[in-house]
Image 1 (cartoon, rainbow, N blue to C red):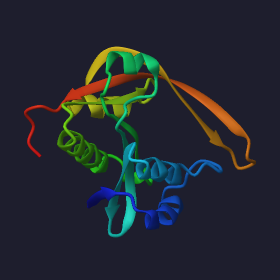
Image 2: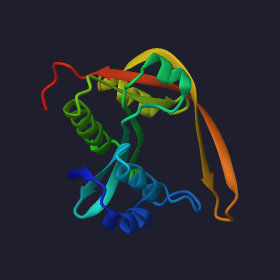
Image 3: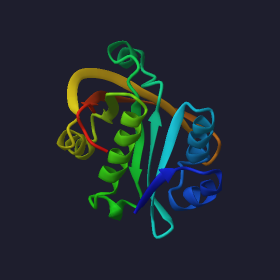
Length: 170
């Protein structure tokens, strides 16, 4: 498996293999944010097929309550493995480790991520990988366009987990 930054030529294949919901062009939006140097959009590849993605948001979590508690803490956002039958095979862990390495090389000693209250499986993985629950709760707000083009606003209750990266080797 190879994990690297997304390239513009990856976008069509990403959309075919890991479709965005409705008309939302999630991968293109993440790539555009990377182009503005506000993020790093990572893609995991297996035999030339994208199987996982995540984004490092260098300016941190957009939720004000998180930013106040963890100013300057890059956020690992949007971790996904697709198709679902590839989950629990180490792809997500590999993407997380690659993100941690990039954050550490970027001069940061702390990384954070949000986990939806309903996603116990992901929370278990993050805690197992050394992320700590800081009792920092927030609403993860985002939107998507359905197949008809209607905009849907979402606010998922989440908690923000952090991990110290000091003392780790690359």
